[in-house]
Length: 128
Image 1 (cartoon, rainbow, N blue to C red):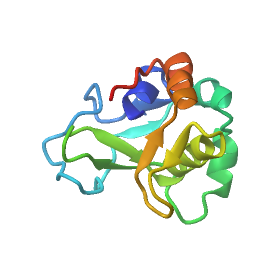
Image 2: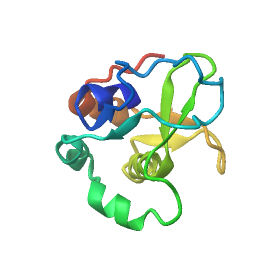
Image 3: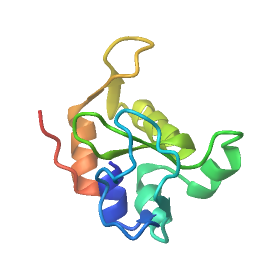
Image 4: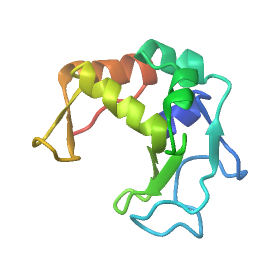
């Protein structure tokens, strides 16, 4: 998801490094102390069709940072968290594009309709 958002200009890198891979100071499975991304100029055009209003997310974020990232231990790529990540997850759950593997658990399962949305709107091809 993070890579697709960067590729489409919804997020832009701020550290001069292309892509969402591990940076030299990133610790595995830990939130990044300083994230190398900012909201990009294409965010409304990319996220709007998913039903997300970036301005509304920013206004409603409370104390949660708009953008936060952690490094996945297996793929060693940055994962989106923060208010924007939570809003995306909530929207995908509301639309039935993902479901929880177990009630109250963080793990999600991508549905067939979710795979179609990811492919059509973000160019992400889901793999097993």
